[in-house]
Each structure stands twice: as structure tokens, then as C-alpha cells.
Amino acid sequence: MMVKKTFAAVMAPVLLLALAGAALAQWPARAAHIRHHQAEQQRRIYQGIRSGELTRGEAGCLEWEQRGIWLDRREARADGTFSGAERAEIRQDQRQASRHIYRAKHNCRDRD
Image 1 (cartoon, rainbow, N blue to C red):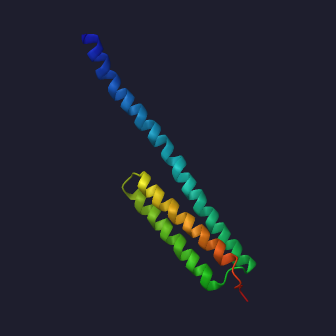
Image 2 (image 1 turned 60 degrees about the vertical axis):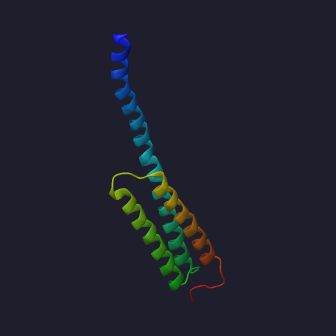
């Protein structure tokens, strides 16, 4: 009986550390996905500027929106944890920004 209690007392912290390690190992991958998505959006904006699909005003608004997402990411990382709720909010902002980029690039306004 004493062996079971000792084994449980030793294994509980080991199991807890293993689970925490697995959760922390996924954090950079999830954060990398968000960084990659934002970099891709920046690339789309710059491509629209180069091709003339975006006016200066449209590009400015889209850049401002990207800066807001970047600030949200920085704020979420400030306390050292990147919670699921924070990640979901940033992903929603990125999806909305992606729609805005598409609409701005495909409207009838072009840079002269």
C-alpha cells in the first residue's frame, strides 16, 4: 500500500510536467500559424500596391488594420501566455482583414 502511494506521489508531478510540456510545445506552432497568416496578408497588400489594384487610401486602411492585429498579438503575448480565447479573437480579426483585402483589391477603384 505504501508503494502505491509513493508511486502515485512521484508519478503525478511527472505526468503533470509531461502534459504541460506538450501544451507548450504546441504554442510556437500555433503562434507561427498566426504569424504566417499575417505575413501572407502583408504580401497581398504589397502586391496590390505594386499592381495598382489598391488606391493609397485603401492601402492605408488595410495597413492600419494589420497594425491593429499586430498590436493585439503583442498584447496577447505580453503576459507569457497565448490563450485559446486570445488566439480565436486574433484569427477572427485576420479572417475579417483577409476579406477586406480581397474586397479592396477587387473593387472598381484602381490607382491612377
